[in-house]
Amino acid sequence: MANTLAFAALADPTRRAVFERLAEGPRAVGELAQDLPVSRPAVSQHLKVLKAAGLVSDRPEGARRVYQIDPQGLGQMRAWLDRFWDGALDAFKAEVERPDPNEEPSA
Amino acid sequence: MNQTIQPAAIRKSLTVAAPPQKAFSVFTEGFDRWWPKSHTIGTAALKQAIIEPRQGGRWYGVDENGHEDDWGEVLAWEPPARLLLAWRINGKWTYDPSLLTEIEVLFKATADGGTQVEFEHRHLERMGEGAAEARAAMESPGGWGGILDGFKQAAES
Image (cartoon, rainbow over all chains, first blue to last red; front, top):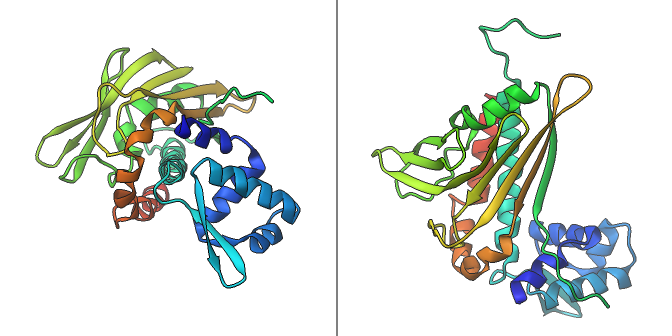
């Protein structure tokens, strides 16, 4: 099942890092390799898996290939939820830790 | 090669400077105080967000016209240690009772009197069918860019 494969592709931390870079905007392989502590061939391998999973797509741009998050894939959905929960949980933390005027501040 | 495919859930871990009792209480009874109001599946603005404090309870939003939008129900209510919610909102941002994704939140006391909060939203692969349709919503001003602005304001207020 294609969707399941897409999530499996994100289980690897480096691949996830590649995916998150692409969530910020389209990148070429070389740009991704510069940002990450992995070799260019390794980045290419991760991109191949992400592409097979339907998470990213690529297009030629001059002599190089530029990768981006596949807008038709499940990748958008997961990227959205991931950020959504980051923000919601930040707001939760702020609310839990907000000083209560009726309460003695704890040490 | 092992072909068993394990979907990657969304996992978050955070520490809050309050004991588990308070963290659980703010997460549930205080839900409306922190849930971003910009996030609703209804057409009108979200006025209130509610988690009913019991197993089998609903969690839902109330819009400014008083209309209630179900998001799912409370699958496990174990204060102050664990909360399990069903999230039944599909990729088209509509309530779908046949869809089950799970949100599990664990509250663990830390040595210094705080709480380690372990959050997981799992079985997301089941949402896949509406992913393409959800794209438009995500890219709109009400999508995650706009929502993040809302979080920032809430967190800093």
